[in-house]
Length: 223
Image (cartoon, rainbow, N blue to C red; front, side):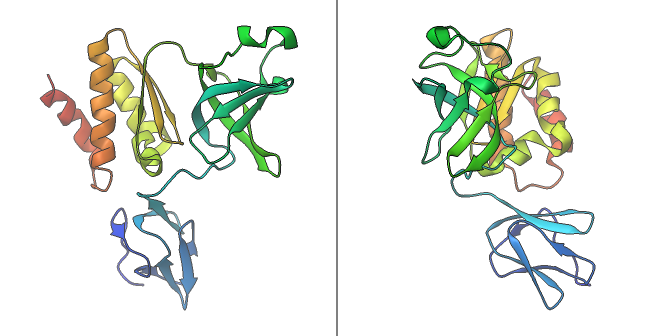
């Protein structure tokens, strides 16, 4: 087996690793026992699966993604949501965790409201959202800013480790939309700005190894 390239920037056509036991994941293909990159990004291995985390490009919705979007319209059956994609998403009345009177939909979500939602289906009808899960729904106050959608896995961290670290250091509530929007709410604007600065630092240094271990020292340098 060739020396494996993990958490390194990989270009299309580059051999990441070699071995019969390895499986090609997202952004890769396997040819003659070699795992080869199909896209530009960061290589990552999880057990025998090797994939590429893209670090450039636009957001492509996937089932299960958490997204932050703006309510831009109301229909007889739900709300139209802008999630930063070519087509708008739809939140059905059935995907809200309580009964909604069709004549009082604006009392739940009105045009201009920002919501945190989960993509539960992508099909011929388009992108369908849900806010039934705990913690999802309207986002009140706070600060919203944009990041590269393809760098959100790094901002979130493995099993949420990175975003949890930022929460602990700033005391802010943070929601990261995989469509490239981040919501931050803290006790003061200074704490919100510190959390934003940390997120942007991770975004800018997403290709660096050992970034999670570096962040506590980075926070100490901000004091």
